[in-house]
Amino acid sequence: MTTDGYGGGLDPRHHANVVVANKPSDAYLGWNGDLTKRFSFFEELLELGYKVGIVIFNGGDVTTEEIYLALKLTKLGAHLFVVEGSGREADKFIKTWRDGVIDDTNAKGVALATALATTRGEIRATAVKANVHIVANNDVDGSRAAFVATAFLA
Picture (cartoon, rainbow, N blue to C red):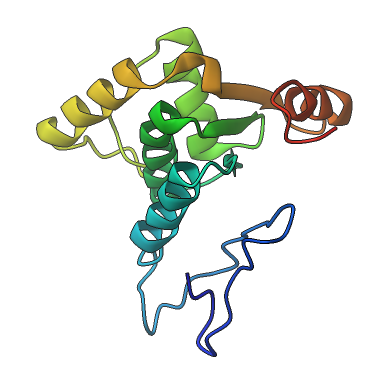
């Protein structure tokens, strides 16, 4: 996978790689234009036997897209870590996931199209629940314990 405009990429011979979406370019990809490529890359890593963990913090509508793409990947072994108390869409997802409080609106409170709300419900229903982890914001020990329990940290 190419990671920048200069042909840079990740070396799969390394023990670990960290991919950070640092602000997708509006000029080339649009606000969420990197999601399809990034999650295809994560899927490829999973198929090659790598561990993939996705951390979600705060967020708006693009973050919600990331959450649901990550939930799909839990069926292939990916782990999703959602930070509780970080605010906005991450916390809204946690209320749905853990507490069953369904809020089928976007980040601005506008109702989702019925088809999208239905699809998201299906994704939640088929996700591997053991691969979804809720960690508290600013709880270093608890977060570390979650990463150790899933073998992302020793």
